[in-house]
Length: 249
Ligand code: SAM
Image (tube, rainbow, N blue to C red; front, side, top):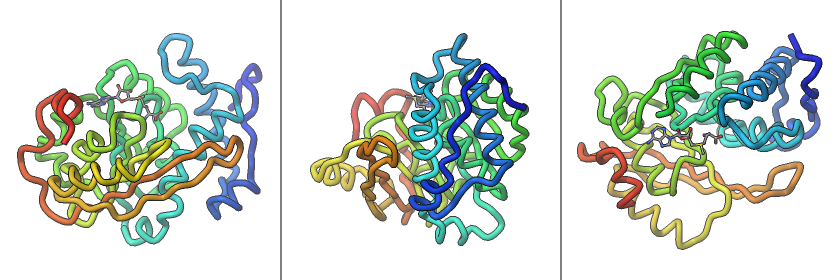
């Protein structure tokens, strides 16, 4: 059901096809619209996102969220029965909710430390009937030390939560061996790669690839950093709440 006061999101079928070799079906497009309407409505009480114009929402929330995983088809398909996925610091549900809409056989955990945001997402998940997504409230530094979460995920997603080495410290402990973390970034430099390499090595990971691309409507620069877990993460990581941020590896 759509709300007649909210503008319609553009469909962009050709752009989806050209850039990601994928396009949403009618049901997925309807869910995108519902998500957009719920977020605009939620924005009046919660500070969910500054990105509210339809084209901008399409590009910076929907397209950007899916760009990180859609081109990793081989990896995604290798997870036969569906993957166990966690989105760290999901905020209003990005990238986790759009990813949940297309990885329908996977279980997506949407984690955030802000209870109000998670309460909002719970309502969204019910409204858009996304039964493969569930929420979790907590600080990732603590969640990463809990046996029910540590080393249990095939795929970790993390966008706009901190520096790359902070994100690596949050992500790698949660991954199973062989699993992949996707760190969504804007700009990126060679020097940052060197610093990240050092952090990733200490955490039992390696940089699998770094992809640079531009967004399809505004040509904004983006990077996705893909980290693979190749060894057990030492038990001291992630360090206590706030330390990965204050003293990055
Ligand atoms: N990932 C979303 C996006 O890209 O639109 C939201 C990004 S928002 C800038 C960062 C989010 O991470 C906030 O909702 C915040 O509450 C959450 N966050 C920050 N530090 C966290 C931590 N240590 N553990 C869990 N969530 C955290």
